[in-house]
Length: 486
Image (cartoon, rainbow, N blue to C red; front, side):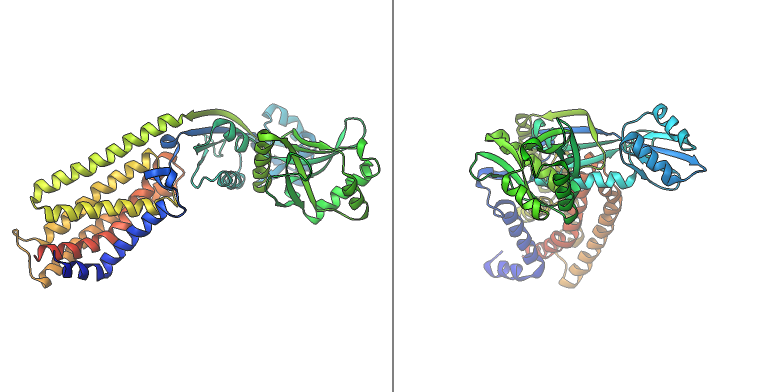
């Protein structure tokens, strides 16, 4: 093609859109933000099997009980909460969620004492609680800088309620995974009363804002500042007054606890005691220690305070990790597989047409489709073995559709007139649209389901189909017309 033909092609909106998306995708991968240290990977997010990392499977410490009673449901709930010292939530008219791992044998006398009986007993959580768990875990994972961690609720066969949650964290070591997502994250403030006894003041749900880890003034200790709600600040002041912590701070430590582990225990400072004597104080700070260990604890505490505690306690029942070295080996293998697939497609297409001016545009269009797909998918999913399989599938289906267009517009090896070309081109696009719609409908259920291994494959396939029919196929039709007319 001469210079004038190329300029006319670039001016066409279909080709211009293709070039714009390719450039935008490259900018998104390599320049937004800049990542020269990552080499060819750029800003692409890789999954557990390509980057290494950890996975945890946790069991909800909760049960769902179907009951019957002739008495007051509110009295039943109150009695259970008092006896079990845990939250009891009414799921619907006939079911209660007891947020504690308690056996049926332990529950039956408690129900009988309230003139109620147990109809069915299952371990797990209600759908509302399950959604809340996923939301909180997602916020904690996002705080680690991960956009698409795999969080899947698992329901055992024969059960109606999720009993486990499995989470995969690419690029995160096992210690960090257990510290951030392998625990409930329940934060509590208590005040020392007499001896070693402490009294509850408030939970983390009274915290309205959280600062970043910083060294406390005049010390090398790390701490996390946070603000209390008006209700929490008032409760804190009343507890300090009643316990005597304001009048005699050294005998009444302020204790901050995270999942039954003390993260801070010290007397009120003289300044804070004076402020509390006059009015509620909303700004507090929790010290976590010095050095790298103190900083790590402060960062973990910040994440738990920001995201909040899980509504139920969890217990790790399974875990594993993929070494980073093995992940790098998988990356190389996958890259080779992609290159071999693209070359194999090129050889087959060349064998069919024996014309480089047709084969090269096909491969370039196919390659540009992969670049656009990577540029978009980096904001949506992580690249793992399943999504890479989706990319390779897109290469194959993309070439199929380009062959359809090429064969349709050629008649006995000759180029038709412009009017006949557009007619045949439109017929080819009609075939492609129907094929794409079939793939879209088939993949949509998998993309919407929480099947960790299939969801990424389905999303990549759907994105590839949409990019193909909306961008690359129209652009190829214009390019191949310009080439064949010569």
